[in-house]
Structures are given as structure tokens and as C-alpha cells.
Length: 204
Image 1 (cartoon, one colour):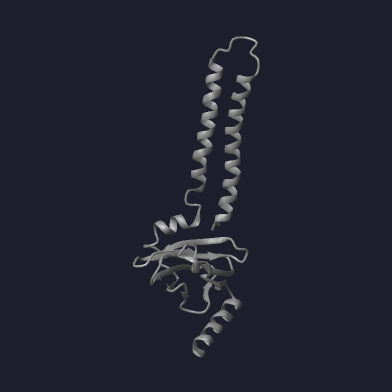
Image 2: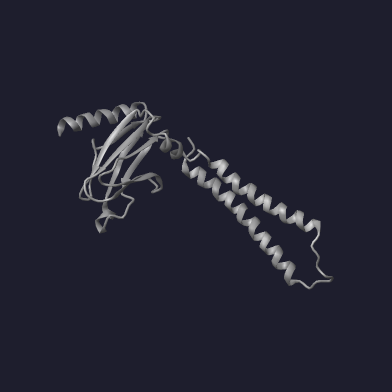
């Protein structure tokens, strides 16, 4: 899977090239109208070819951005077809009074699994965002009360993630955070996490 960070890295390069072309076109025009003319300026076929060449390059780069990123951003295809996707796991999460209620203390996911998150708000409009340890966002969705709110995501990288509300829902909304709420693992680490979860469930 191509992560959003990789796509954004590509977009930075593409937009840098795109901006450089536009600025160079403006700079060329500015220089041409400010320098003293040795002879009367006349439009020729060369100028027409130059202009349409620049425009063609701009269109090529602009359209190229969309072609390169079409269905490369992970959640686009999943979001459009989520009703047809059979998830390996489903988690039902409710939010009320500025608090996430998870089905388990830690949501354990096996590396490579496709997961459906079903969210239900009991009072306000919240956000549901999954964040990496470095604070970068994996995905987010809006959770509207009285509506069906779900999101499908395929996890193919082991790690620990936190859940935070990404929607303004009043002053208390900034504290709506569950650290280390989701763990993606495989092998012995996965087995250990499942065992710990079962032990905690029996204790509670």
C-alpha cells in the first residue's frame, strides 16, 4: 500500500515543478516588457509555438498530478467501495460526553488485515482520527450523531496508534484522546497482545 505520506512527498515535487514553470513564464514576460527594445516587437510564429508549448507543459503537469495520484491515495478506493468490502475485523466505537468507549482496552489488529470502524455519537459531532507515534495522521472521519459513520482501512504496517477527535466539538473536545488505543502486530507479539486482552476481559 502507498501511504499518504509518500503521495504527499510526490505532490511536493510535482507542485514545485509546476510553480517553477509558472514563475518562469511570468519572469520571461516581465523581462521582455522592461528591457529596452532595439526594434519594434512583432509577434511571430515562434512566439505562438513558445506560448502554446508552455501552456501544453502546464496542462501536462496538471493532468499528470491527477493521473499519478488516482486511486493511489489509499482511502479513495476503499471509501468508494466500502459497502462491498468484507472486513477481517469490525470495531464498534461509541462517543458520548467527550469520551471514546472502545470494545476492548486495546484494539489488536493483525498486520495485513482490513478493518471496519463503526462509530456512533450519542450527543455532538466528533472526529475520529488515528495518529502515529510521531503525531502524523493515518486517517480521520467525521462522526455525526444519528448517522451511519464507518470507515474501512487496511493495515499493513506494524505499530502503535492513538485515537483523537479531529472535529471541533466545544472546548472539551481538545482532550478527547486515547493513547496507544490501536496496536498492529504479527507473530508472537500479536499472540501476546491477544492473550493480554483476554486476561483483562476476564478480570473486568
